[in-house]
Structure formats: structure tokens, C-alpha cells
Amino acid sequence: MTNGKRVIVAVDESEESMFALSWCLTDFLAGNLHPYATLILLYVKPPPPAYSSIDVAGQLFSGDVLATMEKHGRDLTESVMNRAAEVHRISENNCVKVEKKVGSGVAEDVICNAVDELQADVLVMGTHDYGFLKRAILGSVSDYCAKHANCPVVVVKRPVPRHSR
Image (cartoon, rainbow, N blue to C red; front, top):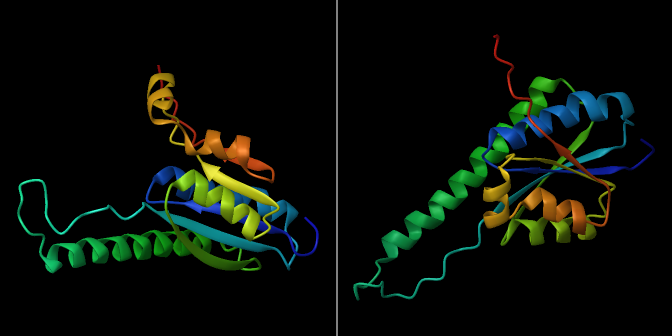
């Protein structure tokens, strides 16, 4: 990699995303690393639910419920970023500069927009490896980003342990 390359790794609470981050640090960047490369950890919070102050049963939502939901979102974000920082620390690839970015909204839209705004040279993502039917129903963030991101996309599949016969 040449001077100033920017690599975004999309992280979430899954083992697959942490595996992709680990792979990026130990396999992708280790052989291509330039001291000025920047690794951007991107976490996308789900969009906040749209609640009225009255729920479906006609009961008034308390401020405590909404505050608890917001706190849970902040705690989840902190947990994901702490796990990602630990993966970086364990990799011993401390030459790379790390930035943390948090977005909110529909994951594939936020990720593709971040690629443009942050001028990423590469996007690295894990995949949940859903089967055909589940992927057809739910869609796949990695499939969408591979087709729509304005940079090369590396989709890292977590190896499945081979069982002895």
C-alpha cells in the first residue's frame, strides 16, 4: 500500500466482523502496510425506533423506557468498539493509525456513504454467510456494499471448522 491509504473495516457485535478485522490486521495490512495507512473502524447503530409517546396499548411511554433504550444503544456501541480495539491490540499491528467512526441508520447506506465521505481506498467486511433463502429474504449488507461501494470491497468469510470423519 502506498502513502495515506484509508481502509474501512465495518464492525458490529458479530464474531464474523471481528474475524474480518483480525484478518485485515494480520493478513491484509501486515504484508502491505505503509506507516501512514489509516484503519477506520466503522460501527453502524440501527436507526432509532420511531415511537410516539403512546404505545399500541394506549399506554404512555415513560421517559425512563426511552432513556434505557438510548443507554443500551450507547453501551452496545462502546462494547463493539472496545472489542475491536482489543482485536487491534492483540494483532500487535500497532504501526497502523486507527480511527473510530459511528453512524446510525440502515447499515448498507451508512457504510457506502462513509466510503465516499472518508475517501476509503478499501472496505473490509465480514459476512454472516446466510443461506440462499435467508439472504434472499433479509438481503445481505456485504452483497449490497460489494455492488454499490465506490472502492474495492473485501468480504472476509470466517472459516468453518472441518470435522474429522
